[in-house]
Length: 587
Image (cartoon, rainbow, N blue to C red; front, side, top):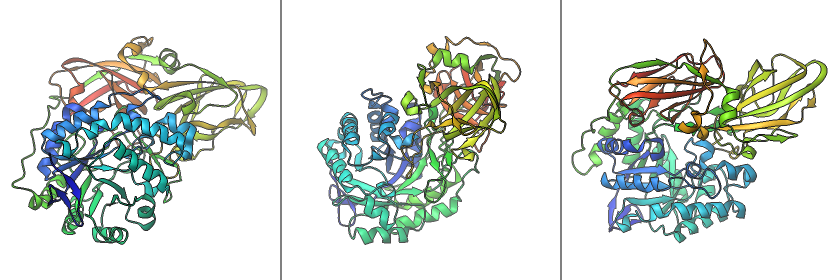
């Protein structure tokens, strides 16, 4: 058993000064079978600690129903076996470019801006969640022989709010649940963020990607004593669909890391290894300095231009960071571990089974809801997936513009079963079809959530059609709405979908095929001809694909593949559809 405390200038382990050389690795973005390898890579880079968030919504799809919460405990056990310390950031809000910042849709839907405040209707579910989750952390604290040395209070709260009563309540709840290691907050090194996000008596840390001396000087103005730590050293960045791939020069990033260490500070490299936003869990941001502009959905890859890439390989940044970190290590650094098994040879195969979207919705969709106005995704109980909104245009009437108010996020529109256009996020939330629509007609709008906002003042906004559908200036009423959740795609359920033969350019729908593999392992998956949708291999959702780029391949973890036949499902939402699926070798 050991003690880990916060001294006047240093972290103290059993009374001796220690420096945390940490790296962010989100266990929920990495297949469990690969945790040991990825931690070995962090050790080889020169890190002695790993940091992770915990996404509430991943484990709580509905109120009172919990998934595999013990997954966090299993990860912390692997951390302990790797001989590393752990920093845990349980939220309840985590940002992390994760859907809804980790908050459950069933909570943010009715509460909206009341989340992350001292509101009893928010605090009650938070307390229930923490009492369910935190035993995984408490049992593995350093003073009980485990690896956990620090636990965070909320996350970058100063970027969002100033409700000190909420932060103090959360601090008390963590202690009441048995957290005995030091607590901390993390915020940008700006006065309004540090004043809004700090808690008296709790260690404050700063987040930045460069300018360590200036950042720590700002922190010292608010906290004259205590160990300095950059809790998020942004060594790279994430990508949005339809933008350029973000890259940070390795040498420049290494010098920024060196400056942090020369300040005598501890550091958490964000990200050391990013992983993948499997199963459509990628979040979204609002553009602009105030994060209130057009929606910018995050890609499936969370590679982050990190020193250990999405496939677990060391990059130039890895070797540069290793040079900077080596002088601070206790003895020689270990060599990188052997990589996991990789696909032996490229494989491709046809996606020759197909079912139209209406048939997929009939087989896998939720109950239909009839209402005067379109319900939101939250009201339909849809977290990740899409909704078909069906409404009639009365007639006879002449052609008029058809518009949607409050569209979030992207709608493929059909009039009397024929494609009529796509309304997208780049157009804003009030959009109009390019061509007019005459009546009578039946209009279907297939709306996909491209990820809920994970940061800024637009956090907790609803998804779907949040206003209405207009014909000229007149609102249309009488909607028949039905949701299709991504988690409805199981092997048993998909087996009941009425597949036929996929013709050339069959269009939106669910495609199915098989890939014969000899020499299974990590691979890249590509869908030439695919426009936008989701892909599953052997029932595991690899996430969203989109021809908008910059991502052109999905990472397929080796443990998902098997020798012989591998079943592939592709849910194409917008284009003609991919005729084949391709697996490529990771170099």
